[in-house]
Image (cartoon, rainbow, N blue to C red; front, side, top):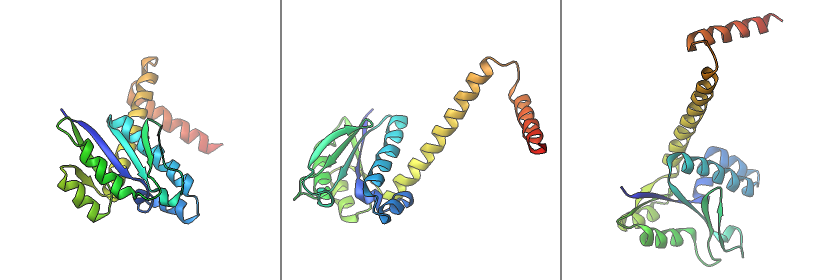
Length: 175
């Protein structure tokens, strides 16, 4: 089975995801980047995939660098290099028989370019929906784990615990 690699056009996501757009409008671009990395990290860990997030250095001049954060690879391109050209180049290089590359961007020209190199593509909106779905799964799994740990030491079954919880809520309202 091929390993999965997702390459994300960072500012493209920031310009498309509602929560990140709000931060960008408030001139909180660093906060938007941080929120994006945080959500992508949770997604990567839960789905077991590798993610490279690429940002244009044009918006942060002179910063060209690569580093790891939250187990993600973060790339700020060279000052004269766009995120699009960097993504197109590495998508072709990294898409092999052992690795399936998917590029997340809503830029149609970039989508066609990476698709012609054998990589898959997903739009910013599609990735946003996928991540929202994964976040719901994470929350449910967390709730299930908590309940399993809770039940391990409890003589009550699930229905009895629900009844007790409702009774507690009713009693709390009466105060």
